[in-house]
Length: 390
Image (cartoon, rainbow, N blue to C red; front, side, top):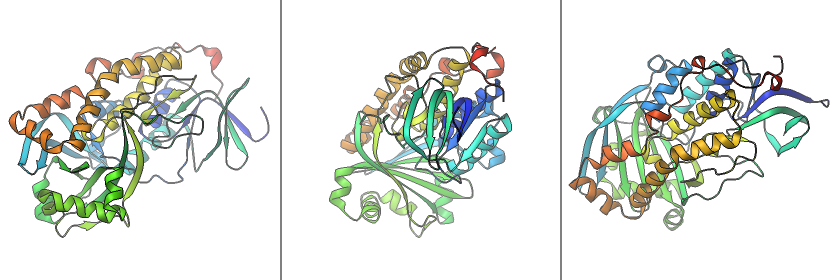
């Protein structure tokens, strides 16, 4: 091993939900894990922050006490369009919690499990395979060597490992926290609200601290036609949705500017592993309206850790994941396209058949049979020769 480099059994790149979940499970099973996170401090992320029943189950496994963190229970879904509002109870338990709070807590749990967490690490030059393992070169002339690499960099592609455009490309996402008027916060209640408008849709839901998260999507060409970025999009949404206009009346934005991310590859599903364990948005990207993005991220982390501990290959993990979520992604992407292209038709179907909301919710979830069991219930099958002393 050369000067200026360190070694671990597993190097996890990215400290979001997927990376932290995998790191915790592996460390608890005795694997020497180093997690490299690009940000020095945990910040907000472009995310709807909806925790479905599958996410709740995984977070409980990991030891997260959501009520203690201030998570808000959710029990209702509303869809607001020109024809009015359609409201139904959620067909499963759900909660809401900001990513900054949850991600920071998971990294703390990772450190307690024995994971070496390094923040402020920027990867330079991609990944190189050499006889000593995977070499990850960092800014500052330091490198980490890992027998295996778990790539969980979220929406940030690593050079040489970029994702394809997906099945619904060209979307741009914005996120803003709001302090609503007390009457509107009370009216929002414990609901997640889906608002449609030409060229996109938005989700509004309560988060801890008595605030609300507005996460919205718009087609890139529509955004260009509107001009002036976020101010123009916000004006467009308020002009087209009387419901959202009422909700945000006299509301206070809580960020200096909205968070944004472009070129979201909805419907993307990684087909080849190349010997790397791809997690989270680097493995699969599901449309935001389903509220299953956080569950899917956690599932990839838990599933990959499970396969690794059983002695499976990265290819076997990737094939299993594709078999489990391929249909889910296809359905979700088709519905997302309809919401963007034909919002009136989509809402008309919901008005005629309200049960379609629950049906779509069930069809876009990770099936219960696929949920990974706690690591303590399995004996690790990973060959001892692949491990290094802590």
